[in-house]
Image (cartoon, rainbow, N blue to C red; front, side):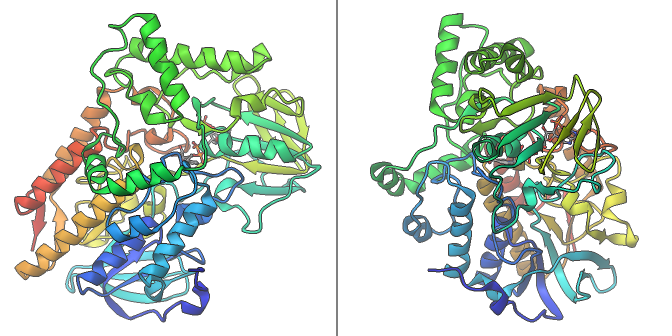
Length: 542
Ligand code: N01
């Protein structure tokens, strides 16, 4: 069905509901649907004009997911997964947005979603045991529960250099791409940032622009996606086996079933290892590469074998030796989010594409004409910022959230996020986060982790209802132990060795804490399920 006009359907804001949901991405949409089936009232506030979250905002050229479509989709409704027809192995942003809109239509979600409305504050009243939620339009809603379904990568960031406003040409951020698209034909374009958004958009912008200059502070490890149209037989095979596949997703490490590695990268011959890496490279799957051996994420020497393999690939593809060397990362493979690309490295063989290594010539400022580095001034018609996000905490701490005693979440987290299970935080009763810091979240297939949190939160709310209770909140002790546990697991890995957004390293002044839970989706789910089955130890219920 064609997407309904969201504006026409935007409902009046109720004065009181059981649950306020912040965000109408995949988390908020499923949560709304599930709460309705439980007979609870809910309203969703969404800053955009339609559903889709990440896939609503990130419309830059070349935007795709890097988890396969048949796996990156809701599992909660067996009929939905039978009825939707995915087109590509790695669907484009428009295809995923269409899926979100299809789900919104199918479950009639929009009638409880208030679009164009950003939540600005949520304050807890200890006497009433309710939350007062306010929006940018001065709406005020009272709710028993608030769920931050705000996503891990929603709060975009620009480079911290002077002069951003002085540039006279066009500027774009990949996360706020104009809905009508951008025509770079005949233009000199500068692009800053070589994470997933940069790596995906660079080849597409290069095709169109007269000239493209890429400013790279840290190179990415990227694998060719080998994207293609899905074949009818693979779609029908998945649809026949979906229940078993979904179960395997839930038990897996990354929310994507893959064979569990059994060998160390260091116990096999170089030939055997290279053959395995080659197979992963050819497969076009990041998880295949990351799960080739048991110790890639744990041991520097093991990781170095993968690093050498990818460096060799880059040198084989990129003709100019200096450019190839500049594109080779030094941090361990996988410790910053690796990328999947379509012709990324090949793009640097074009005569009209230039790479500027900011480690040799740092950014100084944006000028009226373009970008100045320590070595040169570059003149552009357009600048694209592919400079990422204040990840995992930004969209939580940007809202004025106040819990017991008026304590602000932002201040409480000033030395790094503190949660129990990445679902709640001590001192903030009945406030839940979907895929919050301290949960597998960004180290997983997001939809698998989203569904798990939504189900867990709904079960907890239902438990309170059944027991005649009103509040649930992590105990300080359980939270402290969980934070220690999350840190301990991270400390056994190579993750802390990179300056990544997982560590908060991309935002100046942000505390350096490894934010996601690295113990795997399956293990994490078991812990959460056990806690629910045992009556929520570690949470205070009242
Ligand atoms: O953001 P990023 P992103 N001066 O933070 C550079 C998901 N995602 O939007 O690495 C100069 O990764 C920064 O340099 P450095 C995915 O989880 C998924 O690309 O900090 N450069 C980096 O190169 C991904 O990881 C998909 O040294 C500056 C880049 O900008 C996450 O979103 C697609 C700078 C930012 O890279 C974020 O990806 C897209 C400065 N001041 C996104 N500040 C898929 O599913 C930043 N940079 C495929």
